[in-house]
Length: 334
Ligand code: PMV
Image (cartoon, rainbow, N blue to C red; front, side):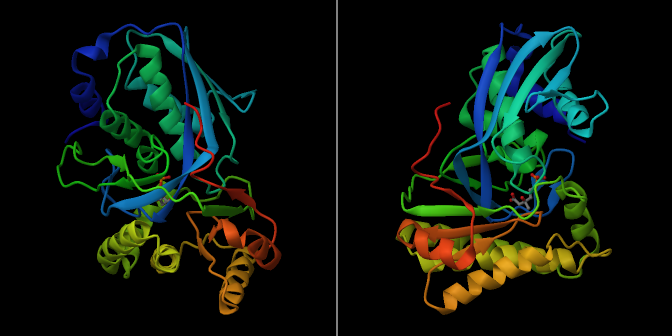
């Protein structure tokens, strides 16, 4: 069995024993999948069953600062976490892969998206941590290496090392060296992603567990890989053609199918709250009136809207208040 440490050693090679510098700092954006990653073919290495495609959220994400310390500490949004906090332990396990000697790291991390609210903050978190490690040690990782290392922290983190549209190639190799994300050349300045935050508390069931339960028990999971592959091709085609209706339809259909597959798991996995459903109905009602607005949802109750800049006011009136992101106009400085 290939371990995470094997992957790290294979990527870093001689760089594995380089001493850390004084500090490292990096930002990584959150990302919203337009075609979702749902199901792993290897749970240790976070290798996906299907490819996925996302859009990064510009300046919404995570900034992380790292320095060598006697022991590990994690400060999240200004508060020092207790060592037994689950997030702290997850970060510690990831850092174990990179330690030189038995020292620790002082990690200061700040999210500009609510933690655990289905806004993929673990994606931006592990991507920012990977990029900060790269600057701390001076490894000068290639984009592919950054993506593979971030994937070991959280699957969707491999997409958050890039901005804009990003595709994660599922790959077929058992060692996962062909499973990484790369940016698409296409840009879509008029695209808007709206985030309706229905609940910003951490979700009761994490995506890791929900994904595994779906793969193991949902009778509908067998249909997912083909549906996802078709959806991904449709999203890619629609982006290339700047066909917004085809783009929105493929993204929404993919999200709804993922939730249907989860709902058929046992025990059923349902992330939606009543407010999620009413937001969905408002999107559909607006579409009935001819407005080109679509939605997507991840492993959480929040609804993300997809629309074009010209429709911003109509969408706000019809669907309600939300955080609007212009992914191609707010690309952050690294
Ligand atoms: O990377 P994870 O384990 O947090 O899983 C992410 C799963 C979804 O957000 C639902 C889909 C995706 O592709 O981001």
